[in-house]
Length: 279
Image (cartoon, rainbow, N blue to C red):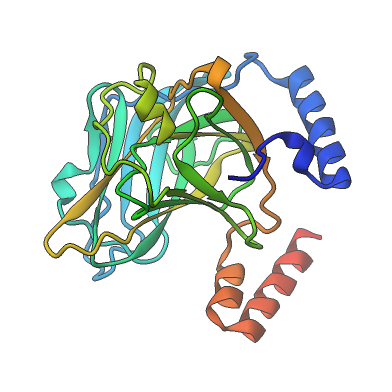
């Protein structure tokens, strides 16, 4: 596994990150940003579309930031097929769950914070989301498409995730092929066992209302599905964990998707139009 310390960043990126961190430290209120809790959910990420594209699952009243109550809306970006859609939702204690059919491959989700009861995005200074139970002998992959800090277990309790940050548009977290199969499913993100921490990663996003994550199961047993767990309060032992900055150069976007999938000219034109609009 690569050295995960911030010192591995290129000098320019490292200085930029330190500057941003200093600004955030001065301006964030409350000091630790916004922390989500899950207690009520509507929807199961399925709809009438054969690929469930655009389907949503809304976690209601996940918290309050600067006097505004917030919901978390998860939306299917591309293709999603669950084995058990009834598994999608909340499992004890305060943990979100997404079920994926093993035969379908990868899928991408948008996570968006909005003002409660609306679709109006709300930007928070800082928000955490931890993913747990990334196991199954290398068959489960979580992909980060949005720049963030990430924390994994280390030291006396080393992570069992292989972390690949060599891609242009993403960072992948895969359970190690030599790991011990499946670990006990989490029931409380704030009280993970040492083994459960080894198969978890916590993301911290800054000054945003939305971020993108991909899930994939390559465990090809027919008739099976996999469950992905997440929470806003995943706690890793600070004495045996390490934090690094995920420097994803390009944000996930339809234009980038076209570039990666082979639609080069369409993707370039999309990105050019977007830059003109932003300017």
